[in-house]
Image: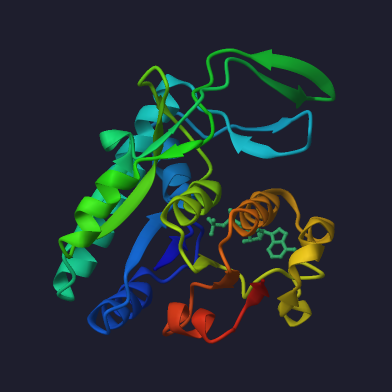
Length: 267
Ligand code: ADP
């Protein structure tokens, strides 16, 4: 069993990724796919006159400020255009994909953050109308029901809060939670970079291998969005996932290359 996370940044090639998923599925590889949709969400939010806002938490992480309207736009793009676009690509290639959000059947479940503390213009502020949280539980029974009957689950945020509200969660960490819950051997995280770079954006500074004990020090190289990926990787490894690979989602056979060790391999 492998879990594949497809990023939502500019440049990721969904057609090539779908080709590779189809090739692997035909070869009998069991797989769950989790995807993002951030770049497209930003475009749609702009077009709808509700431009994205990003906030930086007091601990230094950047995230999308998700008020109710943003959440609705987020759902349109992640659960609609991106999820169904991928389901269609896979169906065209003979893979019986089922696209679901983490809200469906509470596949992703966890607490909503009651308040978020952020830094804005150098000042600490508390936001209360933010619909974000984190994934603590995964509905493994529902995923197994699909997998055991030959379907490929294609999952996306939002998650369900314990009160049943839709909440925005980090896709990489959701994928790590799925890998953990299913006891996956590998978690492949496809993005628009070749892996973790020592000097971002210099692609020749790719870090090919990080031993398990040094994941925390990798946080020194990771800037903003990459930090959550490294955090997700650490969580997955702690939970027994043998190997996490940060790999390039812009190339041919991106997953097979990652399985062969291209990218940043953490184990
Ligand atoms: P996705 O949408 O694919 O999940 P993100 O945009 O969240 O991807 O994260 C990938 C981005 O992280 C890269 O496009 C890059 O801008 C940024 N980044 C920050 N630090 C690094 C680093 N050290 N190595 C690689 N990418 C980095």
